[in-house]
Amino acid sequence: MLEPILTSTSSERVLIFIAARGEGYLREMAAFYDTAPAPLLKQLEKLENGGVLFSRLAGRTRLYGFNPRYPFLVELKALLDKALTFYPEDERAGLLDNRRRPRRKGKPV
Image 1: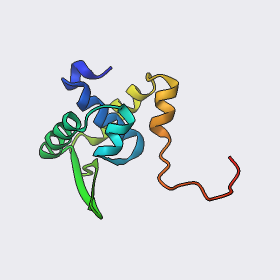
Image 2: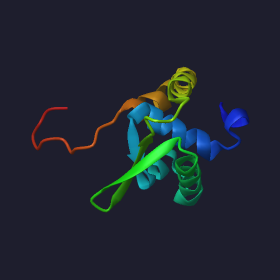
Image 3: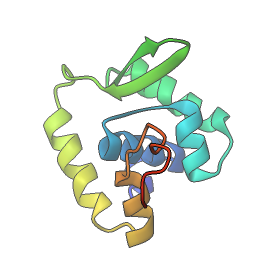
C-alpha cells in the first residue's frame, strides 16, 4: 500500500511491523511475512543509517524500534497507523498480536 512512497515492499513491511508492535527483530519479521531475511535486513540497515530506526542488543538479538529523536516521527507514525487500518483483518490482527512468552502450562485457551 505504501510501496510507491517508500520505494520497496521490504521497507513498508519493516515500518508497518515496527509501528504495530513497537519493536521487533529480523527473524521475527521474516517469519511473519514468510520471506527471506536478507531484503528486510537491508532495509533495517538503511533506515537505521537514515536515523528513522535505532537498534539495541537484547542478549544476542538485535531489536529495532523507532528513533524517538527522528524529526518526523509523529507524522510517520500517523501515516503508518492510517495505512494499517487498510490492511486485511487477519494480517492486522497478526501484526497487533504481540505475544512474546509461551502460554502457562495447563492454562485454558
